[in-house]
View 1 (cartoon, rainbow, N blue to C red):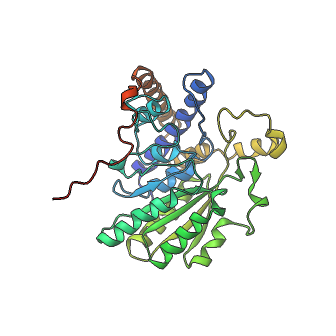
View 2: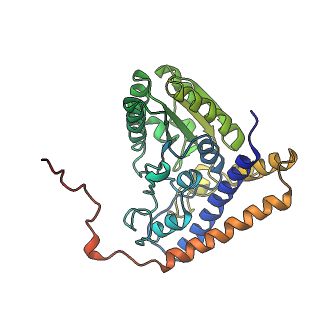
View 3: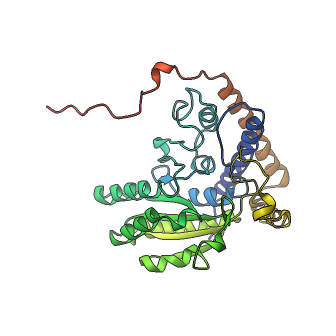
Length: 329
């Protein structure tokens, strides 16, 4: 599949934006600049960016607890994302949602959730809305290998297939649910093998390769828009950092080795995409480095934006927490 040069460079830019955003989050969290946990997406950038590159702004996505990569991949603003992590009023949820609840309906970001698998039914609901309204937008749900065992996911996949909904289910199989190995908790070799039980295609993809993720998702999006129903894509990937900031690293040796981490780092998704771009003559090394440098600059500005944004007023605590009563004539 031929991919437009501008799209390839946009994918590279968004992958670098995610990487540099997460590195900055780790830095400021370690310095105590914001409280609470955060789940770094470092190492998995190709899954979200490759998938979202196949979508339009009018298409919807729903993410999970590892929640910064998905909205950035869809085109979300890093300044508003960083402000949300800092708990400031200029954040996506006015400082009330924190790391795991970034949403921007204007570009199809339905939001994320810290409860495993809970955002998948939300994405199915969006796909149902498209079907009922006769619109051509599609919905995409991200979930991890741990959530692949949640009942909500299986109920969602079954219903999506029964109703032939325009949705793509994407499993980010990063090998571990916190510290529990995928191999110890899933009865099939691959999550994508489960697709046959729900009468939908199941595609296994190298999740470190953004181009491969784009091609698989573009095919699934085409099926969905044509009215051919849902698809399941499994991207085999790996998180380079620990499950969550603030949990410490004391258990690393108990569930994975440094050798395993180092071997996966040899397949850094950014290195893979840059190699493809440069080897195909799409851009030079200098142009790729300039894209990286620009995202570093934007993340620094986003961090200053967050630091300078005020905290919410206590009197605003319950604003936006529920809908206003519906007025009937």
